[in-house]
Length: 225
Image (tube, rainbow, N blue to C red):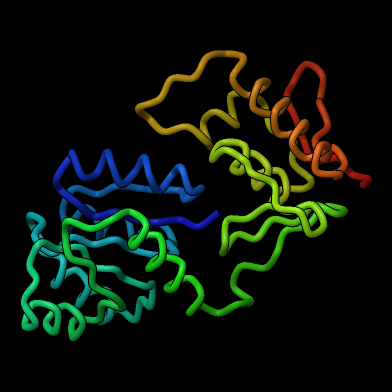
């Protein structure tokens, strides 16, 4: 799953962007200032950083420059309301890969994210496959043979968890902890419902059921296709 760090202090923008990005199957962490963003980047690997310039404690340009000084090559897409040529040059010279001026259409953001992902090493995110089922982490696409399967973000994340961890069994609590954020409190049967729909969609597309129920515990990827 493509992992994005969003560094933005405007809560309204954070809520809107996080919702839209998760709808497209991105995993999103949020930092509200530059120093917090730096802490996140020290602790985890990200595929892209969405970085507002006007953030407290350490501004976006300074954070980007620090990243490059430490040879961190993660793609950086700067978000800002400042639209002068000098501002853009300043951000790009600090090491940003792209620059998007607020307000912007969400479709343009998604297009720029896809472009940044395409520039990365194509071998960095290999396809995950199970029989005729294929998951492309870079493009966030699931297919059965040549047929694309439309999954919700949580269905996609569930499938990716199983494909990335073929020898591991997951309890329902473990799956909830991995897939739901701190601000969400899903009901006890939510995992069961999502897996039921995931199985149905894969079967309708002509694929096999890749998920095995571990009675009394949870779920795992079937060992035989």
